[in-house]
Amino acid sequence: MNREVTLPLIVDDRGTLQVAAADVSKLLRTLGGRWLRLVEAGEGELDEDTVAALTIELAKLADRIDVACIAHSSGTASG
Image 1 (cartoon, one colour):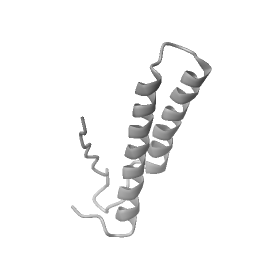
Image 2 (cartoon, helix red, strand yellow):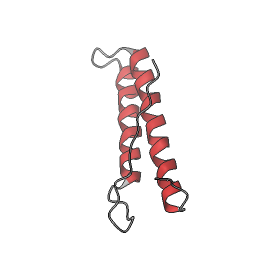
Image 3 (cartoon, rainbow, N blue to C red):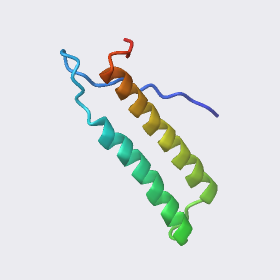
């Protein structure tokens, strides 16, 4: 199952970003990394395949946020 997630950038009326995108993408990557470490340590009842898949998707989402913000800051964002 492949579902796309659309994340609009939150900007004010001057086009200034109101969300610290670097913090959001770092959070997504950190969360995935912590899940992986828990699986590797054998803690909890986490399914390794599920954690791996979720971690990959979180990283992809973080990448999309980064790309969208780069496009926005360079003036190439549409909409």
